[in-house]
Length: 302
Image (cartoon, rainbow, N blue to C red; front, top):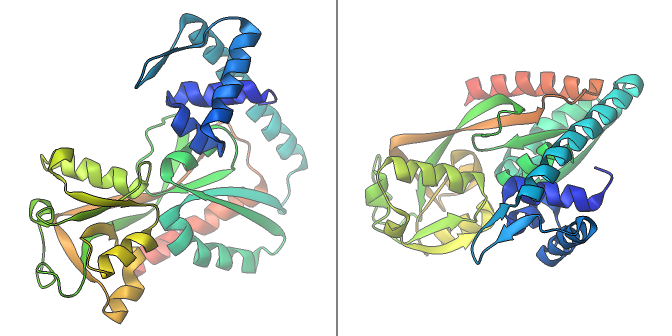
């Protein structure tokens, strides 16, 4: 959107969180608050009801949000219409990817794509799954690649491959020799989790809920912001974790970590996500076709 105040308000209203909006917009929380207050001063009314632990839209806020949604869609249509007129096989694609995918899947995929499409520029933004979905919703990237289910039905979600998550321990851990492990048995030990907003964390939390495990029953000793940090803590014997098997191939070969399948198994999608209304550059269509073939081939190989 052209009006930064309206863009910031729209993101806060959609997420109902100043903190999550700041992460999605790559701004500080005070800067987000300042932009919203400026918009409230412009309309001379409060747009949010604020309490100590939650926010909600006022009647005026709901009305502004309705218009902000329409304005956002018009900007997307304008952007798409111009791209359709000027689009060719070249251009620059903006891609948002969650940490696990950016570190372990995209380098090979994008490298192979660039080898056959040297005229296409690619810019990659890396964040957690929540932030990547927000980037797609706000039209900040052309394509998102995420590692958890996407609840927004207004977006197009295309499955790339299914990823297995496994229990991970140090080689000398009591669980290291087991063929399978139930999550209740795993949580008898200190647990190392990913940070809030991580796709891995969301999938694991849903798995725990389905197993009847309350969050209070998890002895979380650390919350870390990347798979590499989690692996390092597990290798140091500080606890157990649940990670994508994709992320631990090197450590399994070196023998520094042990992977134990969960019982029942835990899987999640790696998916491409983009706007329904977004007109595509030809380069984006070429990338999606290439990625679909790439994922299909590597899913069979895995």
